[in-house]
Length: 272
Image (cartoon, rainbow, N blue to C red; front, side):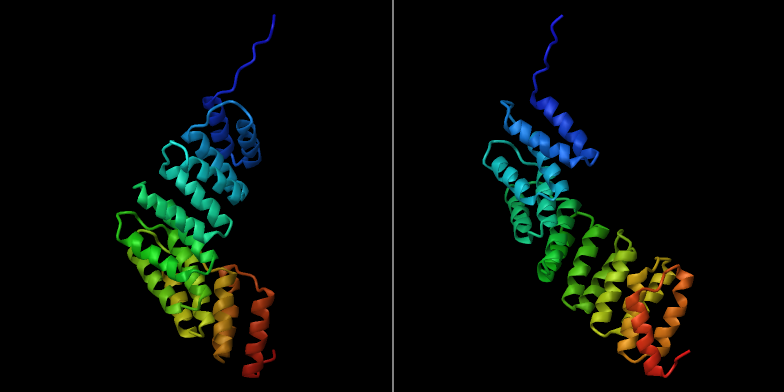
């Protein structure tokens, strides 16, 4: 009995692509992208969305961008999922300008924006040290009915940290406390680091007190930033006190913290 061959169609490709993306099997997803481009199967919106998502997972932002451009030139309808995948691909590739360009196209085409859209765009700006644009996105998001996510706040705060804008970082932190997106360890550590870079050791310690009250866990980054901030300000007693508190928080001393602690000891004349 002759074996029947199943002819590939868009449904088969889309189902397989979706399974690859959901399971994180981006390598197989990219193979499907190549296979489909060489077949006679006509791609639809789901096909492109799945292919772009596979490229995004693989960090292939250029390939994702090419697929996205091909889709914009077709008569296919682009939805939120497609745009989000393209913007996320740009974010992973450090292409903040393209991420904002795609966000602008979404607005022009009246495609619904969501939390993922803003978070990916903000992270792209943060990675590109574009703190002003990241903060602009925070303001735009606040004017919509879209609920700000913890990831979007973290991206904006990290952008402020990189540019030494510790007061802006604190303002954003206060906003997170007023929203449904409660700050986590990453949020707090980023703000503490921003304070450390600006020499605002008192603000860093005040924030640590808020963390303890809110039962937010501290990590090595949190303690490193506070200890270095105190050491820079010649507050050696506070620096050593923080070192003694690390074991209670189950945080291990690293090389950076140890160096800061030794410097604090030298400043205070404490050698034992």
